[in-house]
Length: 193
Image (cartoon, rainbow, N blue to C red; front, side, top):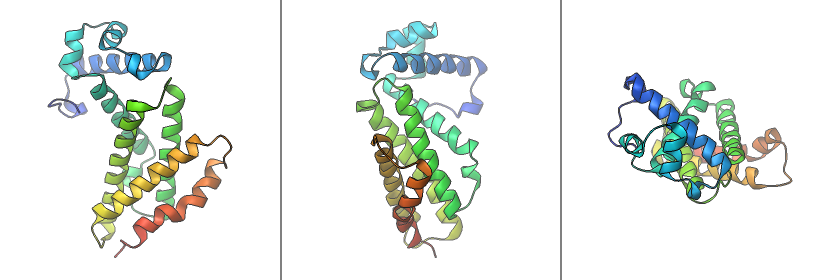
């Protein structure tokens, strides 16, 4: 997590530029080598900054990775306007599609998506999926707590998306989503008031 970082839109342009350089350098490096092999020095050199500047923005490479995953997944949600929607089967279907595609894209761009990279990605995707589902459930009223329903559904969605991405021979994504919709919905249906 970022240390006392203000929201992105309120950052000084120089800070935004430096963060963008760090993010780009980091993205390039994890395409080239395993996450564990990437050092702070590698990131700083690739970004054209010194190590002290890196540490002024992030305490370590795990915080940079967490920040980058959070920002990229949030951008996907916003691009598909899911954050401006309400709960419906079509929106749930779109959310599952987003999670499946995001995991697939992240895995294809990372030399080794396992280990710490996979754990941080899982945490960020589940947290943001849960937050979006909670917003949807709070809009329609929920019993029991939207937190419980959203937590269960976000774990199910992430797990099912990860499963699809790990399979060598699998259904098309559209067919798979139709098969798993009842598994995701069951966590949310009982909560509708």
